[in-house]
Amino acid sequence: MSGSISNSTELTPVQQELYEFIAGELVSGEGVGAITADEDLIKRGIVDSLGVQMLVDFCESRYGFRVADADLVPENFQTLRQLADYVGRKQAEGGASGRRGLRSRGRR
Image 1 (cartoon, rainbow, N blue to C red):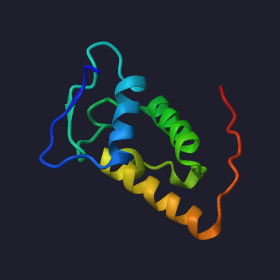
Image 2: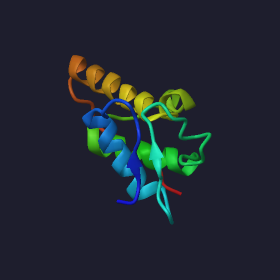
Image 3: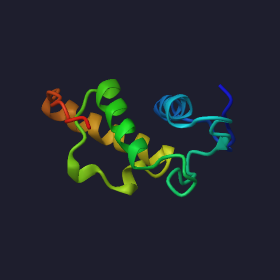
């Protein structure tokens, strides 16, 4: 991969998986470059509206939960840390109430 992580602490396993997805699927050309767990992916132009949808699809298939429309806010997708925290919250909700079935989202 052409991107690299530049931060003072190591990424968590979920942050690393999300980074690899972003670097491999959302970034074209020269790659994502160095990012930190707290860097704003939206302001930097790495994640746009299509990128958010791709992240939603990835999270739903990889981590086994459904992203509710109410969760589609920048605060959940702005940084690797926020996205990983969101994944953790959704997994905890699923663990507390049993695994929820995934509903298919309409594709355009």
